[in-house]
Image 1 (cartoon, one colour):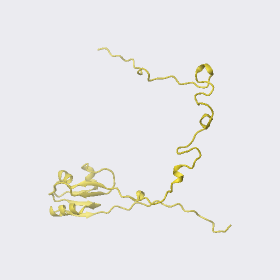
Image 2: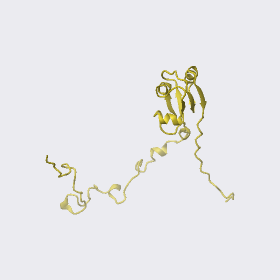
Image 3: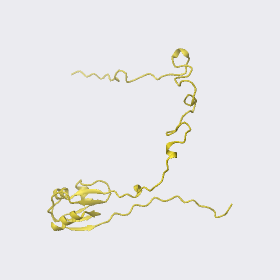
Image 4: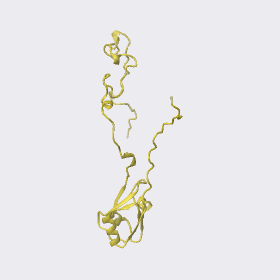
Length: 168
């Protein structure tokens, strides 16, 4: 069986570099493809994103007020009792490490157990949170729950302006 080892790029994949500003005959002489005059024709003539030709830009015309809870939001990993019931045997402990091992969670965010699905095994739970209906199902099946609340996220520090205390 013969192999063709002559590798080459498909037609039109490799193009010549466009050379500009090399005389009238080249087709890209005089203004070198930049049109006639104006800010964009000059060297260093760029504008920033949001520039509106000197008019006060929209992002400066609108007030930026309010509070965002985003830096302080809590991320939870959700696990349903139905999935736990499929992967655990009675008497086992359900905690972050065992949930990782069984492939039910990823990462280190705190775990919350929800009541979706059938559950009838007596298990010991050591997680950050359990919904009220899940707690009811676990206790009905003969399991017990120990809550390990997640550690609080560090709040972002405000930049303080120090003064020397003297009046000028």
